[in-house]
Image 1 (cartoon, protein in one colour):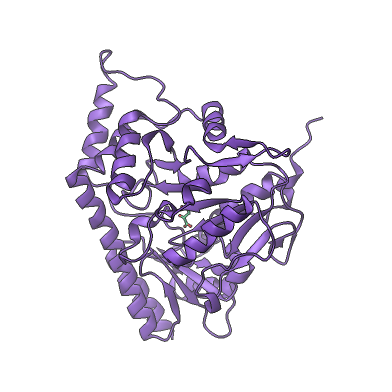
Image 2 (cartoon, protein in one colour):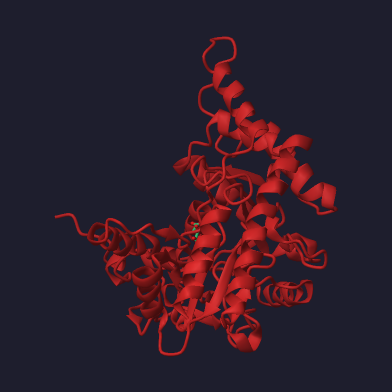
Length: 408
Ligand code: MLT
């Protein structure tokens, strides 16, 4: 008899975004005339910039000819892209990351969900509350938690991110082994300062912990004083893995390309205390379970670093940040308390009096036909908050703001 992995049965009903999709479809079926504006899942809407698509097309053309055809790409990513990443994302900014430390992949969701496999089953996991659900659910599936009670799993160490700490987690009072940090943060839009990150690096170094640093939204940082990479902090190479993505910068949510940095000197330990290089373990994991990103997509990602590609990506990010600015201004004008949306594409609002997160979700859907994401879907400390994504066309953003203003 095939027994199932019963840890899956501990998971909350559905992954957050499919659950929202289900509720929105039910509403749309019952209200076919409603013009729904989707500001829930953070999915981009603008086309991939022309120089990037041109590179993808010409790489696809190469595949039509025996002389330039390519079969399996290397599981770690093709050298031209790894070198372009190391130079453009890190070395040009004075950050020490080598091409051989970069693992190209099909998404930061996959990488941040899969990375826990290289750590022991009894690892103590710390994560923020609210949190991007992938970090939590992937550890539940792996059996690192007990049951879920009142929105929190037994066995996880939650780091509340609240208005009182400006949505930046304080250090835990106990020792933990793995720490998930995300900056700019999904969902709150908060960005960790250099000092705050330095405290975490120090904590990890003191306790031989590993930080799993999700920087998928780093392109949205416009404030010069804020760190884009954890490796800007001294000592971080010894304690951190970093995830980055082309999804929200170059418009690759459907195209799929991302990368993970595992520094050569980063080690975990065996139960008997022997150091083991995490680079080798992640390489082994990827070589076994992943077959690389397609050649045209890697050429497209490479083209995002040409002068034209870079300018176009900056333009896309600026467009979405302007959306966020419009949303902040319009929502503030009708009395909402708003966080985020400055160095991040997400706004985090306090729900109005009388509404919990799902109540406000229903209220907006039914009365404004606008979809957002209930804060409680990201964790118990997200209750009373609501996330709006700035990834939309400008006219849709304006229309959504008009409708929300009309509710008050
Ligand atoms: C979100 O809306 O939180 C993101 O789109 C999720 C993701 O990138 O996987």
